[in-house]
Amino acid sequence: MADTEESPLRITPTVRALSSALRATRGNVHGCVRRGVGGGDKMFPEPEKLWFKESSAKNLRSRDFLSASTMLNTLYADGQVPPAVMTRVLSVCGRGVLPVAGGEVMDEGLRVRVDRAAAFRAVLAGGATEYLAPSAPRQGCVVLNCPALHPKPNPPTPDSLTLGQLRTILLADHMGALLRGQGFSVSLCPVLPEDSDMVNFLRTLGIDWPTCPADWTNEEREEKIQEALEKSAYRERETERGRRTGAGRGRKKADEGENEAAVRVNLKRVFQDEGLQGYDPSLGTCTVHRDSVSHLAQLDLATADCTVAMATALHVTSCQDEFRQQQIAMLWRASGATHTQRHLVCGPVKTPASQLSAAQYLQLRRGQMKEASEMKYGDQVEGQTWDDIIRVMTSATIRFELLSTVHTSPVTLDVQREGGVSTKGPRGGVFVMYNCARLHTLFDSYDRGVEKGLYPEIPDGSELDFSALKEEGEWLLLFNYLIPFSELLDQSGQALDCEGGGARVNLKTEQICKFLVSLSKDFSSYYNRVHVLGEPLPHLFNQMFCRLYLLRALRELYHSALETLNLPPIPQL
Image 1 (cartoon, rainbow, N blue to C red):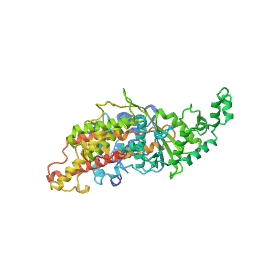
Image 2: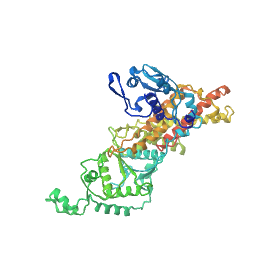
Image 3: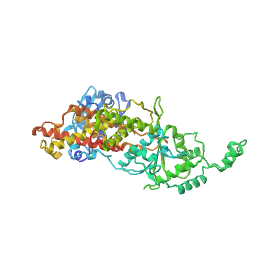
């Protein structure tokens, strides 16, 4: 047990330990074989499939982990778990493994129950800090490139920015915060002119994009890129084009003059020669334009300060711009860049019966948020404080609307003037921010109670008996949210490490938003049902303090999750 208490509890090590205990042999042997009935070979299931972590309130009343009867039948004759194996399952331990209180075989399978009082104590008594960050720091350099912000050839503006392009920018910003939190060095590309309309627009949404002086140029790098492409082994010479096209017979003289000066690169040869998978076979030959050179020079700048030889460039692009971005990626490769390149492609954003620019969308949601706030809070909605609240709530609404869906899937928005935003009900960003604010209000109320002498100061966690946390919502909040959060944060970096799979990379970018909405629903249900600050009676203080420890950890969990979305918590709402 000592090792368990010293190490943060984790779901994955627990599942692995239970799987190792349940199999006929110790050790993590994948796909091992044993003799089945009649002498036939029988394959063991993969370890991660042997156990299922429960999450629903109904099932958590009787079990925390389940190995289904179908799995037991695969492992053992008639699904009968040998006593020695059951003993191993009930005595699992090790680094990060949750303490087991008991287990039994029922019709649905072998169910295991965690020692919940020990788990509450292990997580909460020390402050839960280790549960609010990635499990292990990582290293590496990632460039998040947002094609929507590059000139094509004119610089984009909030009025020219589409909702699909806004989705890619928000996604790049979210991925940047996630990866920085894991220890990666992250650069955003391109740099934008300071005090430009686009920079101010992004700041309104809480996005701190890198900037440069308005008169800054990247000419030196552009010249270097242009020269590299002109000398590239993949550049098509005039004779090569002549063999494929009949030397351009029949073309107008003006066209001939233009083609003579242009640099053309055979992109198909680039990805074929270098064995790069997943690129569109119709890329063919590309003429190098000035905006392409500018784009490549910005990428070169973004990787210049990388502390490792090989960086990963993640191109966050819309599906409409994917082909163009594949061209850019292969041009960069043809210019001599050897960095790993992956493409995070976003589905379209649809607004039935309406067409809005990003600027119009922000204006619409901000107006709706101000109107909804005035309806709920009346005349107090005025001054700088409320301006800041409405700005953050608007940003939260937009982020949750555009980031809560799997990034490859389309998003459909309700942009009718009379709807779209509410301060009530589980509606994404507003609902999440409201419940985070409720936790701040709760602790403000407790602090006022301490000042009035109603409650004592919260004691050290070692002085509390956490077996007082018996309400089912309390275990649900710990087991479904506090304990798994660290592993949730790990996933984006792990996905980038995966080799193969082609040009595209699919990341579970929607998980943080969905996690926060689900957390808010379960917290709201618990908070509406349980009176945390009870009567100021000494015999009730232990339970109240245990609950405050849980909810204080939950408040920090909100802060950590919202930080990955660059959303500051609102202390009061």
